[in-house]
Length: 310
Image (cartoon, rainbow, N blue to C red; front, side):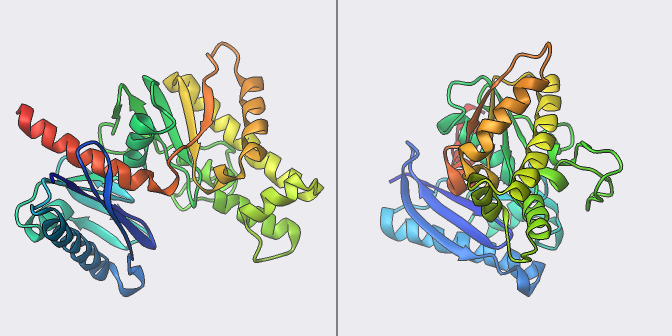
């Protein structure tokens, strides 16, 4: 059976699948990234995992994978196939596409950015189906975005489009690792809410999920922390709406798991801020933590389609 390899590399774990022509998941697997052993070990883990997937496909379906799609975090040069930089994995300038192609015996490989790859999946087979323009924003450890235009994700001139987490929402505010102060992700990411709630509650182990539960229970301290995050997120989204005019805003990541505890006040906050802008539909992501892997499969099939048309 014709199939492709799909691999989503995260900061702590990797999700992978063999994907059939119609998008069916023929085989799924997970492994640790192994970042505690250093960047070289991470690269070795990726290559080993891809090779194991190739071998499984060959044994199970009687043929080599037709292509592979790999999603990685950080700054990615998709044209050159280079993982330029990823702080949480400790690597820089890794020619990952060429390394994977060699390890997989010449199998063509598409390399993509993790959030943009997840956005590709959400746009085509998830919450963005039918939307010609959308913005996908996962709210996790940080905040990033994927700009969808007619089924394609816009990478930008230098591969950095969608970095909405580093739009300054509160000038002079909390310092951010990017060198600025008051960035959106320092105020409205799941990790930002976790830090704020841990301080407000006096429990250093408390996280964003705990805060959401406390909000639902009516705890005024939690309500204040949550509202501050929602207000910052709404300011960021209205800025995005003004610039991009999306038809749909897709919100994912850990914070979105709070459901209507997040979406009800967020929709209200965005609505009260817009003036001349057209209010987009704000919906939760549909694919959860499988979006990156499914998107990697789409990258692989797109690569094959491009080679055929060429």
